[in-house]
Length: 352
Ligand code: EPU
Image: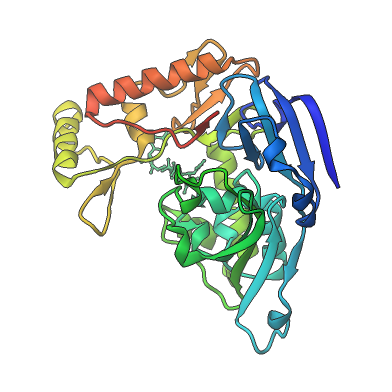
């Protein structure tokens, strides 16, 4: 079924909690429903949203918002024989809440998405944004992405190798095709064999403590990750945000050496600047560290604030923040990080 509403209040459809409206809002329940939508006729611009967890509405939306309620999780027939297959291919509808899929996988004892537990958002958007956390990106477990092509009006599918996945990036975000393909469902390759990925930060110690000598399961990892996330990140139902507001910047080794030397001059020779050396010789530096060094952690500005436990997150502190207040804070953070470190931060959050 396809439902259409006009002047729809989007407050509950964006985790930032921006009080905006959409001129037209269309929600559909099945893959087949998409064929009934007259894409040519829709009020423009057209935007397909998922859980609204990675966007900032800067104003009322003048066009059409689409939202999928395609809700199924199905093990593909050829993988149902538990003795014959280590890999389990699972087809998941774009409208499934990603964490519900993680919960289902953990309960089935399937490995692959446990590190991605508790990330807000839906399955369709996860394949566009290449969500990631604790050393795993969703591209690591995606096998195929099924879409509806709104221009040629046909169903198409892409192998993971063709989707140019990168850090919070995919071919779907290419300006040439942005908005053309609507993800209907995603096939994930999970595993029946243990595949714990525990190299990120102190995850291994935390999981071993939680396991207390017993075998590590996807469920134990999931529980540990949820605990860590709850300690560090705001609960969207309590305080609006879109998770990490900025991407972690990647800089040259020389640039990093300058930042490290300046930090040692400022704080003493023992200071450790967090960083990850990448295979190509560049260095990823946590934006959270830079923002904290610039004094922003916990700072408020009108209804907006920099989250006190993770400064990479901008929050709708009062629940009444205006988009302008969030954007004002964003600009000032970018300016101070540029001035102190000569690094330009780029938002991860889409500005609509
Ligand atoms: N840090 C500080 N001060 C803080 C918090 C962190 O200096 O108050 C530094 C620490 O050195 C810490 C480092 O930042 O070791 C990394 O922090 P964290 O592990 O929290 O990860 P992150 O790089 O800040 C990324 C993702 C998160 C994901 C976490 C865990 C991006 C933009 N963000 O954050 O994703 O949950 O890793 O894997 O890559 C999201 O995308 O919405 C999101 C929350």
